[in-house]
Amino acid sequence: MLAHSKVQSFGAERSLMGDKLERRFATRAVHSGTKHIQGAVNTPIFQSSTYRLSDDRYAGWAGGAQHTLIYSRLSSVNSEACVEKICALEGAEDGELFASGMAAISTVMLGLLSNGDHMVASADVYGGTYGLMTEELPRFGIHVTMANMQDTASYEAAIQGNTKMIYIETLSNPVLKVCDIAAMAAIAKRHHLLLVIDNTFTSPWGCQPIALGCDIVIHSTTKYLSGHSDIVGGAVVGRKDLIAEIFTKKIHFGGAPDPHACYLLERGMRTLSARMPIHCRNAAEIARRLDAHPQIEKTIHPSLPSHPDHELGKRIMPKGTGMLAFVVEGGDAAAVRFMRNLQLIFEATSLGGVESLIECPFNSSHRFIPEPVRTAAGVVPGFVRISVGIEDVEDIWHDIEQALAQL
Ligand SMILES: *Cc1c(COP(=O)(O)O)cnc(C)c1O
Image 1 (cartoon, rainbow, N blue to C red):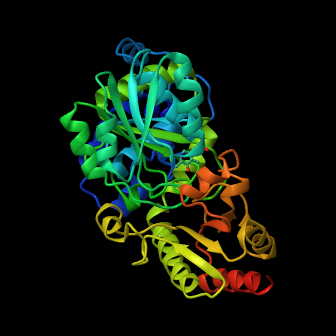
Image 2 (image 1 turned 120 degrees about the vertical axis):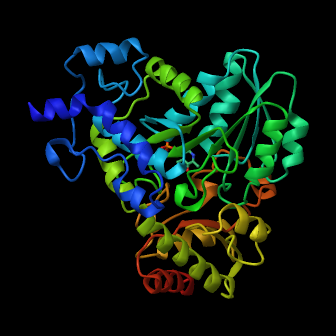
């Protein structure tokens, strides 16, 4: 009975959250959103597809059903806990949780754009997003012009009379170019367009795009937010009116997350501000050492003065990133041999987990992009990407050194 009444007072628990926003980031990461059901310290795994209907819930249903515990495609105890935490970390008014990053991205694009609408994006966005924009959206009469995320003027030049949305990412993959979010926000404002950003690569610890003028922030929670390579998930946060619309589309498209995955996400996010400084510090240190290594042609990390966005990065994501790229002497064959020589760093796609992961874009994320296009984008032969984990930096370095020495 106690559990039941606690869950019924869910709405009241939510509204309390707003009063706690003055708490600092690390405290919000630990505490925001947690549902202390039956006095539990952590939100328990609340594995139920549906909830007993009551007058409160009928009232919530009549009011649009958002954040009302009715049925788990709409929301669940565990998804509510997560979304409140992400909103608290991003400084967002509201949010919705999804079953994957791509479910979040596709619901935003297909949900907010209609036949005849146009958006401006960039060819170096996440591969799945690129596929959605080039292969799926045109089938529904939604057209995308590809501009250059690092050249804000190219975005403005691509705007048409029917443009509705500008789409950017904090850092491009895999060459880690920084987007001038504030300049993009000025363009969006001038032309009355929605500015949507995928902030997966820095997490809200590294960059908070809403403060820079974005309307909607998307995450693949698979990455830094969950942080342990154990779930696939997504989130969309931002302006309340837009999120209400996205909620309706989520119900129709169906990309809702499972309570157990949400539980793991919430657990992961509690340590976000403990993990992120180590990812970033390790990546910057490995970048510094690689930069001085004779077998490395080029090292790409915004912390290096040689990085083209070194100064811009200090403004947009001053705390750095745990993502790192470099070019091994000897081309793609050498890069693959280098990867296979590693003993600690795991060869796998994805990023943002506590363990270091490595991949060569030419045979993974960028395998369907023709070589001349890849090379023009900076993914030259020998290109390797590492998601630097939180292991001891000396062990990560030792592994890289011994793998290079065997080449
Ligand atoms: C992984 C990723 C996605 C897709 O997320 P999924 O959870 O794999 O669906 C989108 N954007 C970026 C930047 C990503 O790294």
